[in-house]
Image (cartoon, rainbow, N blue to C red; front, top):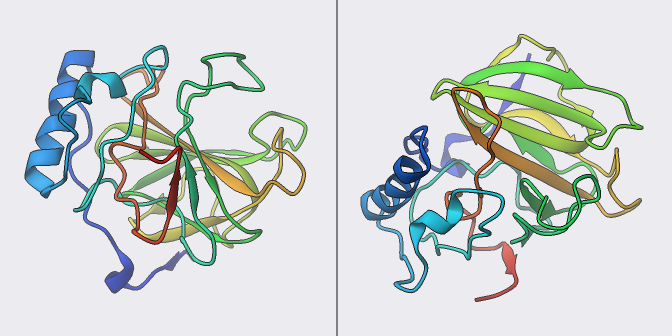
Length: 211
């Protein structure tokens, strides 16, 4: 049985990105307009589309993609999509790292199904979930310390359900507790997009580098 956080702590989730780079760029802009977000005029929305074009942050002041982690007691969002990756090298970082403390709750960002559970602690992701949302978007949650009780590959989850807990498994630095979170639109889920411009980042989180 999964645990759901109280509704008062939720953020609304907006539509996920279309399948082309141009469509994704338009969707980012549409998301900004629809949600009352503040978009820096000098930051093209298309810059969020691929690993080889790292995005600068679009400042979110309204709803966006549900934040994947409890921000208390620590929330340090590293704006490092497209940065250095231990696995893929320079330019190969395919998600966002969110610094936290050991055991902070990790959430399903939308309704969907947990399609794969990884438990090989010697692999780069360590303990990890791969989730397919109802909007045909894949989400990846890496370096977990553990999984929420009662869940397994094939379990249906709802937005806000606790699915795991922050850790340092896999190739994370020991004691460097954080959630590595990826967002990959369908249909093939091969191309990640920068989650940071799309997330409803709680105001209590610190985002680095500051802009």
